[in-house]
Length: 251
Image (cartoon, rainbow, N blue to C red; front, side, top):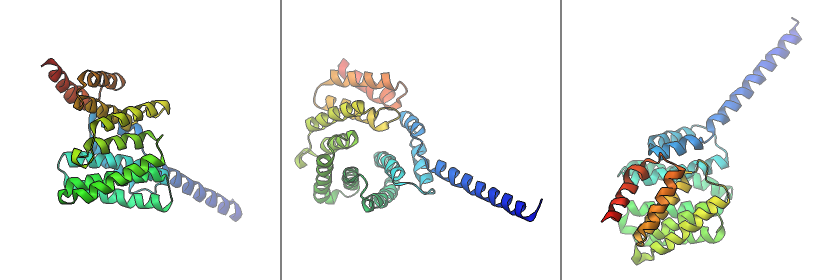
């Protein structure tokens, strides 16, 4: 083999190695929605934590950042429910930095507004003394998101959450929440955004809870049946919420 051939082969090997490394790098950065959806059904949020942390080790595209923020949003809620406040704060800070990146690129402003609204709502759980200012800002962001993109099912769903969880004295309304959940479900289904989408199932669950809170337990039961038809292994609905609902109906 002459010198030129040896150099050419070496360059080709080096180039191929670089390409394979780049490809594996971007494969690693992909968000595995199916695995995270199945973890949601099993209520195994350690899988979400691992995926969130692993994502930070890879160079993500703007789209991937937006996708992982959605799981951070869900994971923060779980942490707060389980009184894991330090972990919630850690992910909130991460989410805030990532939202700043999306803002810098002017990427889907409506979604950014809605996640900003969610962060303020989460802050209320940690800072009860600042409920008025945080609550007002959360509502402002939610309304801005809704008016910017009223046909985005995720935005409509999270707007429902703002109405559902906000205290009545601050303008919260279970009926308004129910309206938004119903609209969000319709949009999710019309836009074929139901496959491996935890937001769709979560919205169905919130809708069932809103029906229950507004006195329509029969409709809540029908929604639970729909959820278990779509996802028979949804652990929380199957083992906790639906059994508790049927007990209430039996009284």
